[in-house]
Length: 41
Image 1: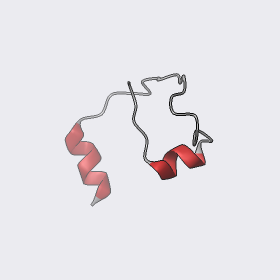
Image 2: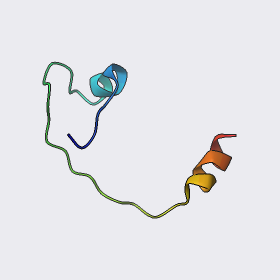
Image 3: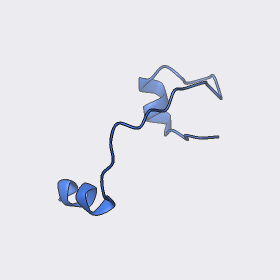
């Protein structure tokens, strides 16, 4: 498994009931974890 979704996220993406689904993972850019934390404050 590469990505594990919450039930709510899976529902919004239409994956409820499927169990497993193929997805494409794409890196959009590099960001430091500290920069992510600052945005959430």
